[in-house]
Image 1 (cartoon, rainbow, N blue to C red):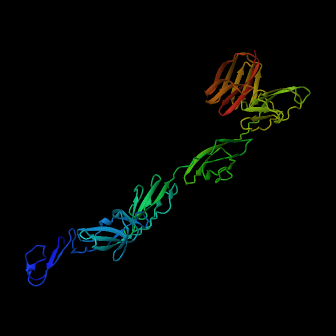
Image 2 (image 1 turned 30 degrees about the vertical axis):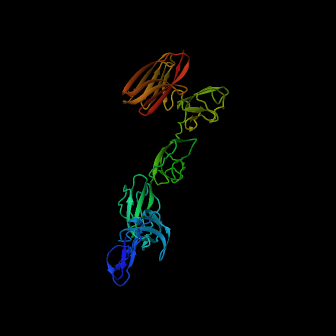
Image 3 (image 1 turned 45 degrees about the vertical axis):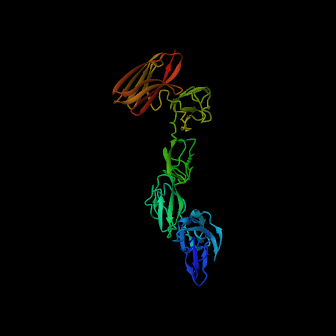
Length: 476
């Protein structure tokens, strides 16, 4: 109330002289009171309303939250001013003013709203507001996991709440359970949000690594086992474990470098397994080339190797650039098939060696000499022709010796594939006379070979799986 004027009394005297009014009381002096200007009389004390605020923590697992005190009802009275304080001692002691009640960061406690009348600053009431910070759930998504060639999926597992939400959804069997099955195609980090019974949430991550990369299998280069290298060590790399197949001829199958001694050419496959369980394979071929050359067929030209004079030996077969020849039981070797000026007793062992494999033939019998052809019988010979027969197959070469033209007559009992070639004493092909199918009966061929010097040639006839050879002399 403002502009208050109060008067009372009796008598007929002016009612509070100078104060206006004409009423008079006859017996008793009048009494008057007037409220000073600008003052008022409060007629209502603001009514406080105690209240509360409950929030989840600002940070999962934290103990503080940010409260908006301005949104809480602490009175129904109007024309009041509300200020906030952390400490209040009745009846009127306030301390620690809350300067930003719209964003007040605090833990669980009581704060106080001072509700002051706007008509009289000495009139106020106090409302108590209880602030509660809920406890966050503890989200636990477990340890990171790996999916590889042996584990194609992973079961995720989260705990700490009453409901769960996973993201992203890619590769998950479900997103609203605690333990979905994960089968991502690429490495993915999943985040689970768990909600506690009080509605507060917390998150945790789990990384699912996809590691399906195959190792690089390397079994090395192909190798050859022959008469000089009877075994070889295989060597594979690229994994943490190894498995070889087939096991034939291997010292072990579960190591990276087994020793291989196969009896026949074999291709080995190694399967390497990487650290992630993935596998890869590679092959290595072990070629077995231990064929011993045929026992040499020789032509011994006397005077005798046993007598006082010198002689010579010519190797008639086998011929070829892959062979070397020895007449001293393998002490020395040469590629030439002719051995000349041999003293009696100087021939101790006539052998042939394959220079590619190191394989050495059995020794020839020095007493067995056929200057016409190996594995064939000299049926008849004239000064100008050579005739070879075997199993009714006949080859006649004339004239022999020849100068620049030589004729061949080949008779076979039945048609069949075959060839006729001329070789020099180095085992090199000089001419292919024929390569195809011989007709049954007589087959004739004429060969022109311009002569530059006297030389010795060997003809080789293959027919019906058999070989006939003979020696030719070409003169200037």
